Image 1 (tube, chains in turn blue, purple):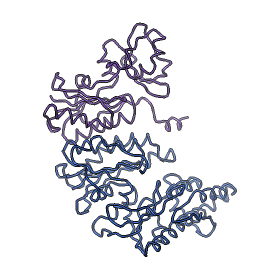
Image 2 (cartoon, helix red, strand yellow):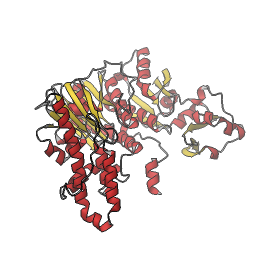
Image 3 (cartoon, chains in turn blue, yellow):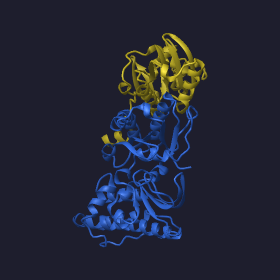
Image 4 (cartoon, one colour):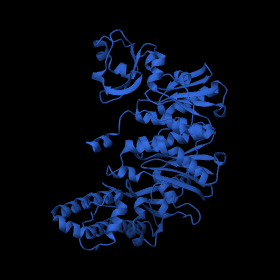
Length: 321
Length: 199
């Protein structure tokens, strides 16, 4: 059994997953409420909370999995990318846990983790497939040929899709976290009410910064009462533009790669319009779209384990190498 | 009682292994490598993690990231090994290593952490009250050597051992062992975002 730990952003998570990919427990303590009053994740606030939560979350993961630490055969942990101070809390906990029980440690890349949310039983996805990874920090098209890795075929040139959702929600006064709020508001609006431009960039890359600027101009030029009346239409049109850009690029890339099946992972993968637009694709289960430790333990099944005690000087990394 | 002591609140992270009043070994490196030093000490003493009976950990004040690494290490070891934890302030450990001296830890942004009437405080370096003839130790004393010496204080040479919060002192000062989760960090400053919100 693998125990996974994830603390790369504002979720403190611990999970137990078997070597066969069966989830034994999945505990996620979200700090979203804590960060809401700042309008975004504050690294120092997140790190302080991780320190408080890792122990209780670990105990709860064991309890819910009806397991003891004696059954844990390896410790998996997110090494990066993410907030460095937050990552170091999880990494230090993982090292202490592995060292004290003479276990191997498996450092996992957070993005590989998201893809590995598709490798769990029942119904584990078999490569090859084209994976759209969409979250607050990343927008990637990945050519996945084996469970141990992937090849990046497209990325965002500026904002991540999740960032575009958060910024749009802020402009529309929908609060934080913005993605889910904007999704809810969009359901009452007309997606064709406004035409927002989707940047055309070469290859399979994305660009969302122009979209946010376009929304800013529309919002700025609307009288307050008119803005109130058109909020749902604006949300729906803005969301539609993001989803259309994601879907068009993803389908084009899948075609280019010889008609590969499509899969979607990451926080924006929870968006209802995106899920409907890619209904034929393999979609990560909703609870595993946002950050969690199940995906980290899952990825560890396909990543090299560092034997005891060779991992004791291991450092975290903030950005992808 | 076999105690593992560690302090990662300053740039020089220290670890010590002690049985009752006897120090079995002590090492220094950086926060991210602290367990590597622990493993070396345990090997030299021919001991294993399972032999530990208590953890003493530096609770700062100091670098927030470093401090958390030590605390989460101590708390996780406590859960894994079923042993209690005792927190010792980094300033108290520094003071124990240099009797008669005032400990000063660099708090960055022209501020220092120091003891005022035995209590930890964060204050502007310029506001440090220096007693002529008195010794000042710690990385904050080294950083503000000119200021302290100008006001008549004494700061040992930069490479003097007194500037490091050696973990042997944590092992000796550790009292009231209890659950790891009850050992809290001494931050002394709210996060910037929170202070901005209050304005």
